[in-house]
Amino acid sequence: MDFSYLLKELSFIFYKFRHVIIYTAIGFFSILCELVIRSFLISININIIISSTLSILIGILIAFYLNIKINFFIKKNLLPRALFYYFLISILSITIQFSINNFTNFEFIKLLNYEIERIIISGVIFIFAYLLHKRFSFRNSAKLGVAIYASREEDVHNIFQKIGVYPDFIHVDIVDDTFVKNSQEINFSKYELIKEYWKKQEIHTHLMTKKPKNLIDEVSKFSNLIFIHKEIDEPFDEIKELAKKNNCRIGIVLHAVNNYDNDLEKVTDNFEDIMILCIPKAGFSGQKFEEKSYSLINKINKLQERKRINLFVDGGINNENIKNINAENIISGSYVLKHKDPREQIMRLKTFGRYI
Image (cartoon, rainbow, N blue to C red):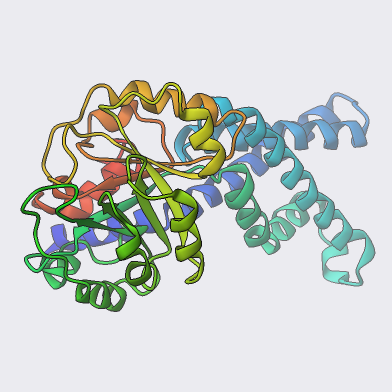
């Protein structure tokens, strides 16, 4: 038996379910801390209600701190909101726990001491609390999409063999002659294969064209989200209406080499999904990261403090510059697919370089 292969597969499984596994371990540890603190406070003659309340609050703070340090990615500017939701959901779950104990007829629960009762009921409502925390407290954890070109040369089956279902979404790149001269012919049948292999993942399409209207109707049949460039020659409203017929969202691409200082407010008012293209020239994979991208990313991050923006970054992302990028969604093509172990690269990018 190849134990190195087995260990790698186990590490992949752990990675896939890492949030819930680490959340469980942290939750158990924080409850133990809470119970130890409660016992200590009672031992020094502090009122039992005060002791219980203080220990619960300290336990919540311990759990929140450990989750943001080792489990979930939270932007600094969103930490207060995350803490608010974490406290709110934690108090709600604790209220449910005490309600189960005080207003039900489960005699076996009433026979247990406080400590055992607290641990058992916490376990019972664990999934409820976890899903709420994942949705509200820590909803800004990073997602990763793998880029695939919709051209005849792209081998979708081979890509699936390399990455499996590890990406959070599939990012399809389409380029035409209005954007890049002598571009490869678009092959829409690639979408059928992508849908077949990645049944549960969303499909996002990046249209690198000056005239997307001709493509929207066909592409929106397969896509959950379509990105168009700000520099297109056609009205945005018409594009949105065409996509809406197939329940498809429209996002906008800002190319980091261009200057958008006078347009960012208007753009972010009209589009919730924003992609920053971080390479010098659109339409070609394998390029180096454009340093100007950091400035544009930071400007969008500032706007996120007062606007609802779902930020994507695409192009030239690697294990080093990812540590300096503050975005909810990462897109990578050749950097993942050309690596000897693409799944490991996915893990590194999703964890902002922390995965070893």
